[in-house]
Amino acid sequence: MSPRPRKVSDEAIYAAAIRAMTRLGPADLTLAEIAAEAGLTASAVVQRFGSKRALLLTMSEQLAASTEGFITGLQAEHRSPLAALRAYADCMAGLAVSPAALFRNLAYLQIDLTDPEFRKHLVKQARGTRAGLKSLIASAKRTGELLEGTDPARLARTVDALLSGSMLTWGFYQKGTAARWMREDLEAVLAPYLARPARRARRR
Image (tube, rainbow, N blue to C red; front, side, top):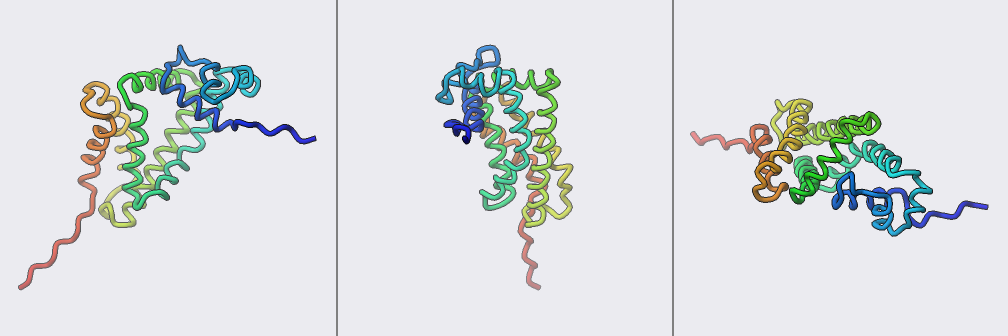
């Protein structure tokens, strides 16, 4: 006799958890809140994952494993590698749709940085992000969007650091939206590397 199929997938529960985390800080996030967001009972989520910690750890592991693929997917969806890079910046800005949302996400980041079990997934996610950014930049170099002398690894490291720092400094100033703030910083970093159309030779 085959097992009864689950009406709600693990991925749907992870998505529900992320939605709940945008509204609630670590202290207020409960399995009951996540279950309600997913349209399940708390007991059903407990039966599947065991605890809130176990659910969040499993979710962190899955997100870390899919990070580089997510960036690759952005490249497939956009007309150029730099368009995909800008889309990634916009996605990251989604962590700071408001000052309160940014502060909640920083609270979760504190857990990721200080709890060894969460941190190992954070490190994997960071490496996947860096690899994905490097791939986008290398593609932009090949397609002529970036100058031939661009070092993809070096620029990827700069963009990686820039986006995290830009989001944090937006929290300091809270001027406009985080998306616009981060996009402006990204454009400033990319500007020296952008390929420009060759000037037409002057007629003699």
